[in-house]
Image (cartoon, rainbow, N blue to C red; front, side, top):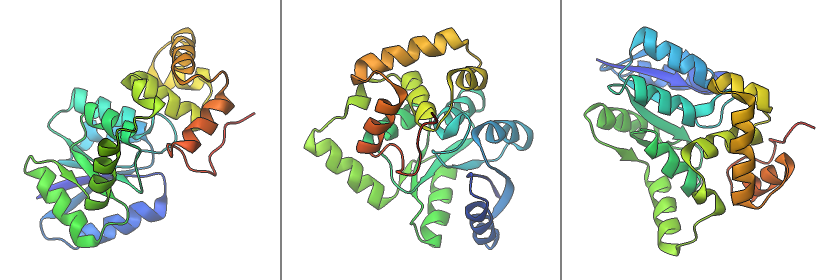
Length: 216
């Protein structure tokens, strides 16, 4: 039996996926989580085989949650579930230990096949996502975000997800001073000077959806 933890901040998405997967004789739902912190906690408690992980969520988000799960529970495989993904985010997520990417637009059977594929120790990338990443690599158009370290990318994503410095520090178990050091370092690399400018740049490169804005 393949035990799956579903992680997404949208209740309807989680329940829909749980219902579909529960129809499979070899898949069981280990639980659901609506943010990265809860995902890590549930992984420690239930030890699922596979985690279906959204990237853009409140709190530490899917990238940091994937890193923590891989670092502390490497036997658990994380399959990123996303509508679309920027090349630089994909690279950082793979570096964090993700076993692959599944498009939210995938058919039911593809999702089941992907879970079984990853369960047996292989990577899986949806055709639409693979094509996007291949075209990005062929074009050679690296974005400014490719310069960032994994930690800098994580903090950048948290900033554009409307999280303040102290909130990020608390969630990542770092000091506010350390977060600001990372913040100004990534500002320098990206040639921006404010959180708003960072968000505009992230919007331009598709790292954040248009309805997500930085708090004033």
